[in-house]
Amino acid sequence: MDTENISRINALPCAELKQRAWNTLVGNAKKSILFLLFYCLVIGVISILLDAEMWGFDETSAPLKYILASTISAILCYFIIAPSAVGYYKFYLERSRNFPEKYSTLFFGYKKYIRNTAAILLTDIIFYGLSAIACIEIFIVCMILIGIDTNASSTVIPVIDITIGKAIYWTVLGIVSIALFSFILYKTFALIEFFPFALADNNKTGAFSLLKSFWKKTSPYNLKMIKLWFSFFGWWVLVVITLGIALLWVAPYWCYAKAELYKEIINENQLDVIENA
Image 1 (cartoon, rainbow, N blue to C red):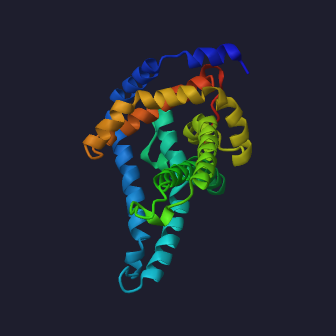
Image 2 (cartoon, rainbow, N blue to C red; image 1 turned 180 degrees about the horizontal axis):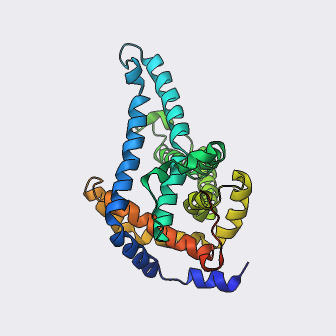
């Protein structure tokens, strides 16, 4: 790897990347926001059409059938929607390059449906799957610590009352597991955030081959990506305060910021972007 280039990118201030992103967003504000709304509309319509209640399943009269139908519905919905993530990121990436992308770019990922679905599924398993496991481990450790009190008169959570020895054993095991999953998430953070851009840029390479090569390319920038994420912390708080309304501005802003860092990583000034049309 080019250590000099890696050091340069990691030393690049997040403020500079955000300023570039801000300039792109301000210059494309209307289309950026309308595209986000179009994306939400498409996702919303698909979700409604596949909702279990739309197919006559009732939660109260037939709870088991409703749960089964809801599970199948969620799986179908995921596999229908997954490739749209590639088109979503392609739109903002090309806008950051000053290319006049159309709203139909959202469906770009369906040109290579199997490849893109497999790639998105794999990255989601890595990130959301490990995140969920880490959260469960944290919950279990907390419950164990609460249940250490074995006093018979204790009514805190008597079901989990255990001996101190077992509590120490499971707590240590839980902490080690959390540390392991957190380490894996850290080592893949840049990959997860940038991989949809790579899928949009390269429509020919197979999902696993691209994932392997891109992981090597992005691995030196995990900490940089985390710093960029935390630099948006105030914006995430604003989204919560406004009950999601601010997301109309923050989501495109965040995508453009990631696009700027992505272009630095692939050294776009010396890279011939692959034609995907």
